Length: 100
Image (cartoon, rainbow, N blue to C red; front, side, top):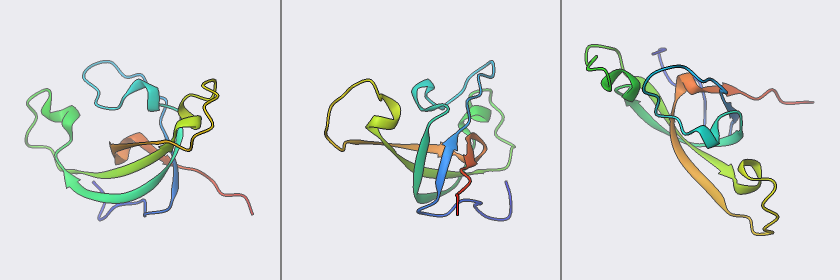
C-alpha cells in the first residue's frame, strides 16, 4: 500500500475492467464503470490475499464508492436517481481524467 490513500472523497474513479483468474472480490457488474469516492474506509487486509491464506501481506486502502444506477444499467429506463454503494480496494480503481 502507498503511504496513504491516493483517492479522496468526491473524486471520480473507474473500476478497472480486469478479469484476473482466481478469487476476486470486485463484482463483475461494477467493472469498467464510473463512480464517486464517498469515503476512505481505511487500510484493511486485502480480501483477495486472505482468500489464499496470505495473511502476511500489507493492508490496502479501501474506499466506499457510489455509482448511479443508470451508469450500471443504462438500458433500464427507470427515471429514478437510485445509487449503488460498494466498498472497493484501491488497486481496483483508476482516476478519471477531468476535462477543463
